[in-house]
Length: 237
Image (cartoon, rainbow, N blue to C red; front, top):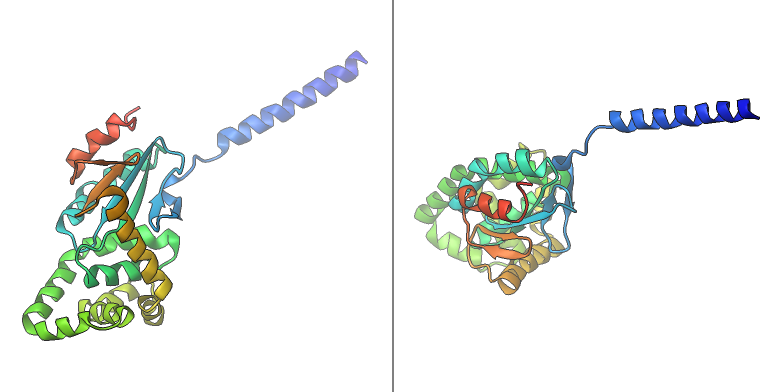
């Protein structure tokens, strides 16, 4: 019996050792690739149980948001999202009206795991869209006024065409037919509009970017000013 117990014990230890080796070999969670749509209509990247939960109310046409995208997003992802310390949620806040709505619609039209790469691309080409809008304002001011009086789906489509968004989204893997369908999608329009309205109602958001850290609006509009807020809430641990 002792021999049998010894054999059984050795077998159990071997199984435990094998399981431990498998656990050690298991790759770490890739939090940057973990993206979900939240009940608030935002897109969250990272560990849903992160001790620090960062929300940005942003506009793709906002230069200050563009600066944050250029200066802050890379270190935020590398040092804080990837490590599971911070989750980052982007919520649309349509400070520029129809152009913002058109950009939000086409961005939210892509698969969930493509949302942030497309968001990055839209910010990287922000100047391109601004130039097109400025040219329209100068050359066709009455046309722009007429577009704003159209039903929302038609209005969003006209601005998407005028800004070159439909052509741009083809470079991001979104076919024209799919883009046009999303631009006229009443449920998607309603969801984005609710996210915008709730931002103003719940957090008093008035401009972009507005950052919320662990459910508290903070006084920061740049990476330099936001980083201490993340640290103060435990991101440096």
